[in-house]
Image (cartoon, rainbow, N blue to C red):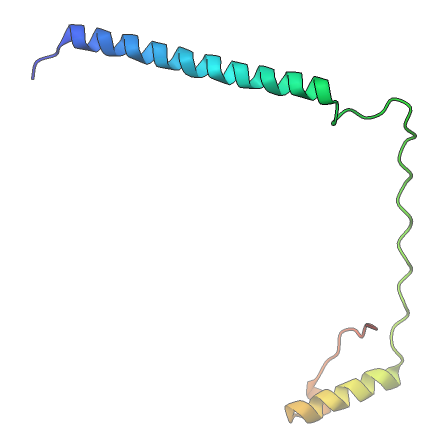
Length: 96
């Protein structure tokens, strides 16, 4: 296998020209983005705007369902599933 030095040097010349071209195009795109941002000012916050209000506190949780409701739900589930009530454990009941 023969190494062709002039062809290698020519390919290096093409390579650095291509890399320089890509770098310049990227720089031009970034410059355009910067200038458009400065011209439109869409992302700049108004200087006289008041600070945002803190979020409202979360609503308190509703109390757990009465034991009678939990027992009725367990009985209905047991009937629908065809099992005994003792085999069902209800972890929580939430209102919809």
